[in-house]
Length: 106
Image (cartoon, rainbow, N blue to C red; front, top):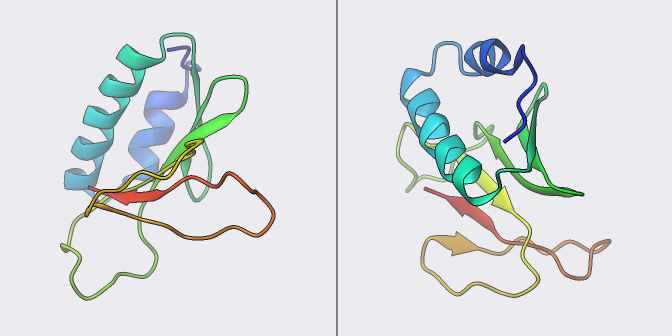
């Protein structure tokens, strides 16, 4: 995966004070790197984005938590061309994007 020189430091700052979530992100990054070696990563204010030709996934810290979520978790949003039926995935409809992807919490 193509990673800008400052990306590792930026990811460390993104997860400042959240070491467990940083470990989850590092595991996610390794999987993304293996699956999408030509992809790129961009650390932004509210999420870390994964790009191919287009944005296909993002990792973020939850701003609001559901009661049944663990105290430490990482939100991973992926765009898929189909519905993924899994108890770990729920759908958040998007009115502007017809083929919206699921939102995943691991």
